[in-house]
Every structure is written in C-alpha cells, then in structure tokens.
Length: 148
Image 1 (cartoon, rainbow, N blue to C red):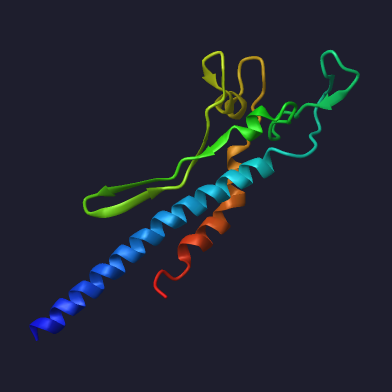
Image 2: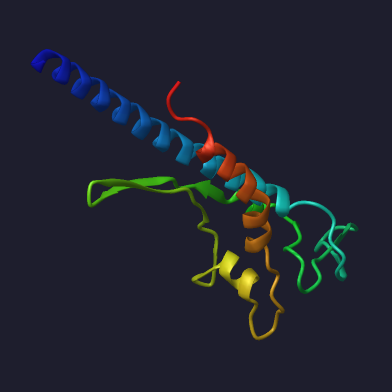
C-alpha cells in the first residue's frame, strides 16, 4: 500500500509541474496575442486631418478624435514589448500576460498621452480595442486542456 501511495504522489507532483509549465507557456502565448493585436489595431488608414510630412512632398492622414492613433513613423506601433510575468502567491501560481510600450515624450509615456488625451489633444483610445480583439483568443489559449 505504501509503494502505491508513493507512486500516486509522484504522478500527482509530475502532473502539477506539467500544468505549471503549460501555464507559463500559455502566458507567453497570450502576451504574444496581445502584442500582435496591438500592432493590428494601430495600423491602417485613419480619417482625420491631412498633414504634409515635413521636408517632403508627401501627405499623411492623422487620426480623428476617438479613433486609434495614426501611424506616421511607426515608432509607437513597433515599440510594443511582451512582459509575461509569473509569481507564486500563497502557494498558487499567478500569471500576468501583458504588453508595454516604453516610448516616452517629454518624460510621459506616449501611450498614456494618446489614450487619455492632453489639454491640446483629444483622446485617441486604443487599449479597449486591443483588449476586445484579444479576449477571445486569450480565453481559448487558457481554456485548452492541460493534460494530454
């Protein structure tokens, strides 16, 4: 009876380790989904005012208030980085699938300025669009069976 109990304990321990490994992997995959959807939301033609690109004969269309920011140089769009994080809290595994853009303008994060607006610029919300586009995909990643 003791040998069988030891074997069951080892099998349970291996199963827990496998599930924790998959959770960490899935958190990284979820962060990748967020980053890809951020780049997707931040692309495409906008419907705001047309401006001339300095020192060229080209024009670009800025974003209108209420739509995601337009892409002129691509710096903000390409600045998104994955930051998946896993930690233990009271014996449980807590994971965070997230992305960040560290791009700053005058000491302020550009993403926050665009999302919330400033005194001279109306908000260009994009975070909700990214979350809405990613929710179903992230849920499918985490709802898939863990043990094969």
